[in-house]
Length: 169
Image (cartoon, rainbow, N blue to C red; front, side, top):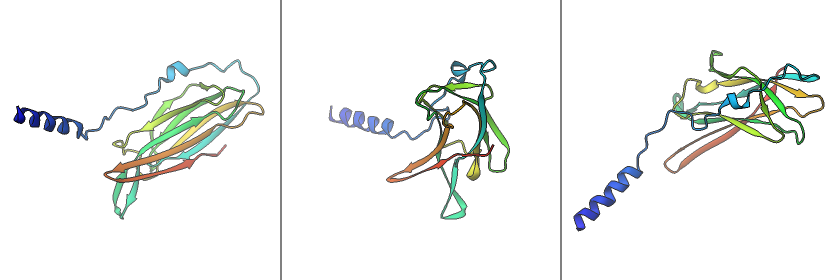
């Protein structure tokens, strides 16, 4: 009985210490549910925003990197207007297009936020990855805010930082 109890406790410990990581997106947004036709909307102003994202950073030297989970947060700052994100493109360190998350208009209701998550094991973007967001908003509406939140934990050590988009057009 005592041996059975010990084996049971050890098996629970082993199972709970599983450090394997899911490679699937942890927040898979169904962009088709947000799709909207804005061809009949008038007086929309458009813009293009750049957001730096880091799926890796250098640690100790240029020869050692640390992987990060990166979250791109897409935010509507308006309290009354719906805004439209037309395209979300993810580029790698060398400017190569890695993924287009959507290339049709999606809506964000007033004060709504949605996210794109780059898993920690996805290092294709490298140390200088970025997003380009195309958007449309009603006249006199605040521009959308795009923020990056990068983090990683290992043992008792944690690392996190944020970035903020800039309008480039």
